[in-house]
View: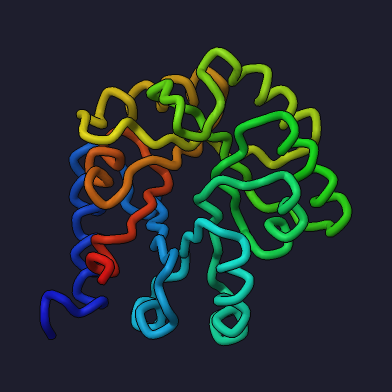
Length: 222
């Protein structure tokens, strides 16, 4: 089996997560590996499913709607995570398709999701996205506005699982992960969606409960 084999890559990532968790005195099963499958086709996803991977991440509602129904039939225990930005007018579709939404970042989206959840009687786990590096081009609420947004989400009945963030590119991620973990603790939240292909081991050591890994599992896009 070559090192480019998807199953081999999956085992390598799982091993690194387990090692990082052990260094931090954590149990590896406290970290959910989300295989970010955006733009990936069925032939790329199927080997990971056969190898036992069950959590997958998509960036766009429409892509998930097209791609996952057949897989859901074959693998009813799989979990779909929305890891990209969500427009409020897509809230109904997102609630119908996803088991977790990692990009709750404004009051209007909280309201739209609450209405969709009540209508469908389906309640995906919600992560509030924080713009941890205060970057104008990125989604996420500011650190200062987080308490009010969390209060809105809780009052609306959203199942708030934790916080999500993407640190600034080309910088040391660890301080941002540590800051997100502190903010989560301050607000009584356990879930931390942080860490991607380049830094998921650091994120695991600093408390990540969900890491979003694409390239390290699927290889570089053609």
